[in-house]
Image (cartoon, rainbow, N blue to C red; front, side, top):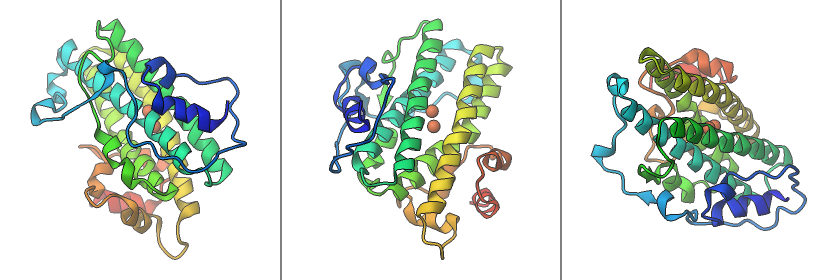
Length: 258
Ligand SMILES: [Fe+2]
Ligand SMILES: [Fe+2]
C-alpha cells in the first residue's frame, strides 16, 4: 500500500480499525499532489467535543482514584489518535518533502498507532472503552497552520511531543505512587518512543532551517503565534530528557528560562 492511500484511509474512514490499520508493506512511489483534508472523519463516539474549564485533566494528587486515572489515560489516548491523524495529514500535505523525512514520518505514525492500542488495552483493563469519555480537537485546531514540513516539525515534534518528555514521566511516577504499576509501565513505553520522535524532529529542523538562524530561533519563527515556548514543557522541566533526544544545548537552556 502507498503512503498516500494509507494516510487517506486514516483520515477519511471513521472506523478506529482503519485508523489503526498498518499494512505490512508500505511504499512511497506515487506521493501524488498535495491533499488537504480539513477535518478527520470519525465515528459518532469519537467526535470532537467542545472543551471547557471543567474538562481539565485531574490533578496529580487526585490520581489515587482509578476513575481519575482512567480519565487521564483516555485523554492521552485521544492525543495519540490526534497524532496519528496529524501525521497522516503531513504525509498527504507534503508529497514533495525528502523521501527520508516521509519515511521517518511514516515510522512515527506506526508508533502512534501502537500507542493508541496500548492505551485502549489499559483502559479496557480498567473497564473503560475508548470513546466513552469526551475527545477534543486540541492539536487538530492547528492543522490549517501546518503548511510546511518545518512548521509540522516545529509544532508536532518540537512542541507537543517535546512536552511529553516531561508529562509522560510525571504522570508515570504519579500512577506508580498510587500503586498503578501497569499504567506506569505504559507511560515508560510512551516516553521511550517519544525520545525518538523528538530526535526525528530535532534532526529535520536542522536540515530544513536557514543555516544562518539557530534551531531555537527557527522554532520560535515556526510555531503558531498563539503558542508560547512553555507549551513545549511540562510543570516540571527535565533538560536531560531533551539531551537524550539530541536537542541543542542552547535550546535546552532557552526553554528552561521561557
Ligand atoms: Fe505517541
Ligand atoms: Fe510521539
